[in-house]
Amino acid sequence: MKAFLLAAGVLGSGLLVAGQGGQTFRTGVDLVSFGVAVVDKKGNLVTDLVESDFEVYEEGKKQALSHFVPCGAMDGGSAVPLHLGALFDMSGSMDADLGFARSAAIKFLNMLHEARDFTLVDFDTEVRVARFSQAEFPRLVERIRTRKADGYTALWDALGVYLDGASGQDGRKILVLYTDGGDNASHIRFNELLDLLKASDATVHAIGFLEHQPQGARMELRQRLEQIAEQTGGQAFFPTTMKALDGVYEKVAAEIDSQYTLGYVSANIRMDGTWRRVEIRIVRPGLKDVKVRTRAGYFAPYRETEAPVRKHGPGA
Image (tube, rainbow, N blue to C red; front, side, top):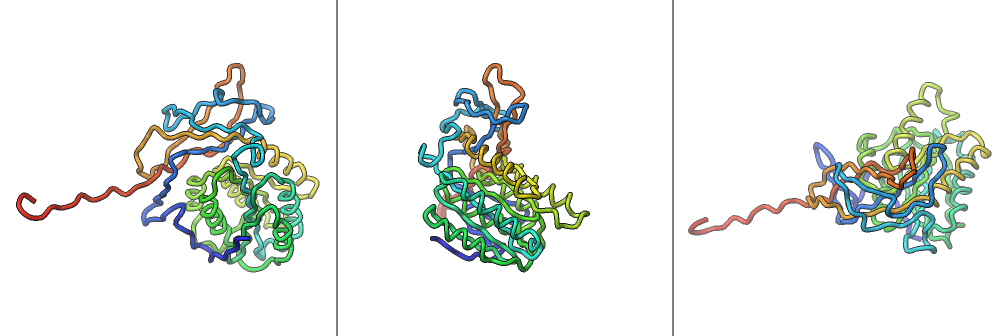
């Protein structure tokens, strides 16, 4: 098991470098990859699409797909591994909901036997990260069960730490977040977190526990969790009972199994670190009123322009 402790707010350099006056994102990956779920007008997942049914546009310009994996092709069925993450709020504000959240997390993680590994991020004032293989699942369960709710809430930092670690993983990355949605201890701000989510290819689903939060704060907490999930093509859910949670898990598990993977090498070769808007369209004849659930774009690779070498001597 790889286990390591990260102080809240301290991110590695694999995903980004935060510069003054804005965010500069650096990556050496040429293939732009998107996890895509498609639903019809009744909300049913569309699972029989083929590569020719998709068109991808970057800043309005059509791109040539170079990578396509149909839905249902996970680790064991294909070469595309599934990495599952759980972000678990252990702060004092979760005390009343902790038993429910623990049972919820363990039940969900136990459903996905096709995951190659599990990354657990549990946090309060600090952020702690551990990665477990399938064989180490009992250790994962024990870790979730033994910690007690205490301290402040560094939710934005915890998400940033997870995204930084996930940037080094190949394949599909799914994160399920268990929290009440509050944050009072993070070093990064919410708008900076949204940039980190935009820069990542992980899909985030949020399970929000709002029943014991102040009535006046619930709407804002709900909106923030929905914004986090939607930024990555995921969804946010707010169950109040284990029975309701069963329905949520069925939806999330079905969407994970029904996600397509699309990849292309951008025709825009500039390595300027800018945000590029991407639209994925379904072009199958006769298939109308479908919704594509995915991230809205990506940050281009970034490379600093080398300064010209000054010559010395005559003619310089």
